[in-house]
Image (cartoon, rainbow over all chains, first blue to last red; front, side, top):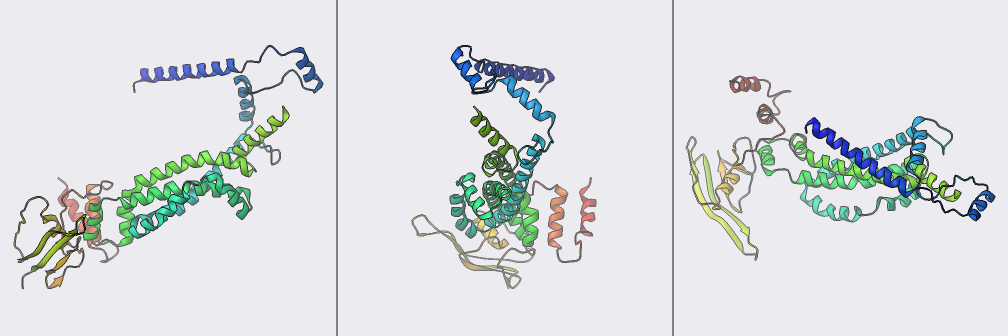
Length: 248
Length: 127
């Protein structure tokens, strides 16, 4: 891409952003027809004129975002932490869950891919367990583990394990026959064959599985945190939503 | 007794309706040491299958292959194979492909079995 194209694309993006913000701003302009009775009622309820209703305006969002971003690491009790701390908790949970999933899924996927018998026997189990919503595991996890933070990690683990497992098994099972035959005629030992022939050949497929898992994990963790509580972006935005709803 | 002896070799696949579908049946031939042999035939007549059986990569439905008075039961370093498609591993350089084969062939002969052989290959491989 030439530099002129780059600036054009950048300008176009800015135009899109401006249009989006403009539409948002117009759509959330405060309505003028508030009647006198309503104003009186508002005063009676001890609320000022600054009553929020429905979707906040871009200005309000910007103001709040600035407030949070300006001081990301404050810590005032378990329910009031800075956005930096919340993000760190979130990243730690996702990282831990993904690491566990990799440790579990890659060796198991290897075994499944290597042996046609294991493949035929285990794929039905995987196909049954895979479509279970990650959030449906949440109550089971909370009930058995009895620790909200570990449950969050468990949910990340369980939702990211399936794509990795299936991709690893598929990648290992579909290594080119020629390479395996080369290894066989050279009398390569099984361990050496696994690490020097099969692993590099299946690596692109395994990495694809990891990328899919990572995408799912980021989607799921926010929803999971809304349920488990504690700290984290999901929990924080969930409680903020609840508090704002009960205030109006 | 000939160096390589092929006796009553057959390869039979089951067809879709369950009846046996032979590719070739009761093939007999012998090859002496140092002999140069070509197998010629139309596509699908079993040339590659015979070669794979000789290499030990495929098993015959019937018959045996005897080389140097021992039956061929699996792939071994005694019999080299050049595959039809190039079977180099694309994630390794040419040199490393060779090194992989040399190290595999000489495995179990000291800590780094390729140490003596690989510089020799380097010397010959460079222009």
